[in-house]
Length: 178
Image 1: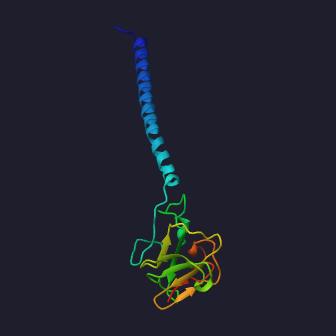
Image 2: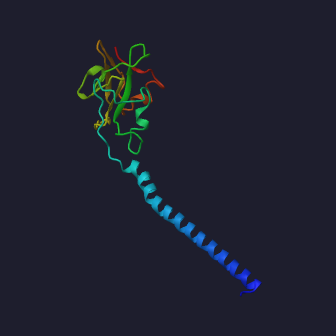
Image 3: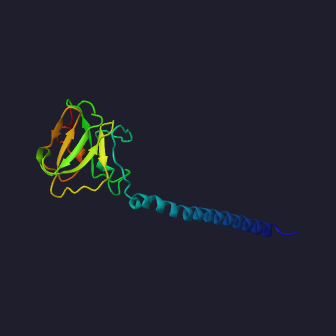
């Protein structure tokens, strides 16, 4: 029969061994969790940067767009949260600039007031938004025209980007059609 001191010594060794075993198992479980999460975090972080440019083009009658009046190209750019990297995007309003103008048409010309060559046509959707991911060369400046059912509004100055809502509705009047 063990002595009282030997009994206490065995008891302490057992408790320390048990604690070591519990600590070791806890560490192994935590480490396994970290090892499992690292690849997932890497995939999530790289997804946005590795995303391909999706073709997104507004169409008459469509209602797939969102965030009417907002600057579309805050998100719809390379590395952004939006699907597709827009080259032209914006929102058309009625002549009072109080409601969206559904299904407007935006044309880009090389000369003012619809003169020169027609470079591109973008058809707005029923929510008033228009957008495209198609390549458009703005290097020489293009003159936009917004067409409604009863008239056309021409922008008097050339633009060198298609980020329409970055100015319109912020530092200048909203785009409008009649």
